[in-house]
Length: 336
Image 1 (cartoon, helix red, strand yellow):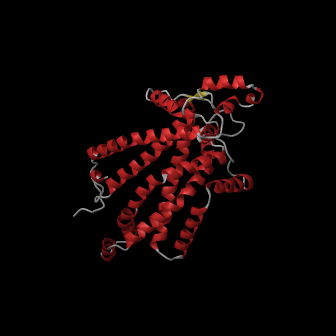
Image 2 (tube, helix red, strand yellow):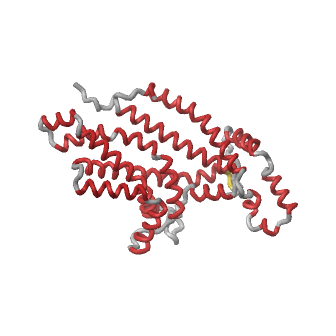
C-alpha cells in the first residue's frame, strides 16, 4: 500500500487551470490597486512640481512653476492621469519617472535584481533554519532546547526589523569588524564582483531572514509535534523503526505541509522587511526608489512599484497553493 504522503504525479492541466483562474482574478485587483495609488498620491500634501524642481523651486517665480506644472500634467485629474498611465503600460511604456529622471522600466530594472536576490536568499535561509530549529524543538517538547528555541522565536517575533539591522551593524561591522556595514561593494572598488556582493549580502540577508525566522520555527514545531502524536507515527515506532526514520520519513513530511502555506503568506512581510533592511544597509534595491517616489508624488513610478509588489504577493500565494496541492493528497486543485 502506498504511503499517503507520497507526492503525486504532476497534474499539469489542473495546475494550469488554477494559475489561469488566479490570473483572471489578479487583473481587476491590479487595476484597483493602481487606481488607489493615483488617488492617494493626488491627496498627498507633497507637491510634485517642487519635488521635481528641487532647490531651484525656492528661487523660481510662480509663472515658472505654473509652466512646469502644466508640462508635468500635475493639474490633470488623477483619474485622467491613471488612465493615461494604464493605457501606456499595456503597450510596455511605464512612463517617465520625474524624481529619477529616467524611464520607469529602467529604474525598476536596475534595482529589482538586487531586491530579488536579497529576498530570495533571506527566504531560503529562514525556511531551512526554521525547519531545523522547529524539528529539534518538536522532538522533545518541554526540554531546555525547546524552551530556548520557543522563547527566542517569540522574542524575535516582536523585534522591529530596523532595530535588528542597526544591532547587526553595531555588532558585526563596528565592534567586530568582520562584515561590511552596507552597500553593494567595497568603497574603493570600481567593479561589482561576486565575492564583494556575497560579503555585503550577509548582513542584510541575515537580518531579513532572522525577522522571518520565528514564524517558520513555530509552524514547524507545531506541525511536527502534532505529527509525532498521530497514530501512523506511533505505529511506525511500534514496528521498531529508528527515531530518525520516524522523524524524517513520517512526521516531517506531514508537519511541513502548513509551512507551504506560510511561505505565501509571508511574502508581504518579506517585502516590507526588505524595504527597511535595504534602507539600513544602503542596499541598492527598490527601497530608495519607493521612498523617493512617495515623497515626490511620482505617479508612474509609484504605480509600477505597487503593481510589482502586488504581483509578488499574488505569485507567492499561488506558489504556496500549488505546493500544497502537490504534496497533500487530500487537496484538489479544482477546489482552490
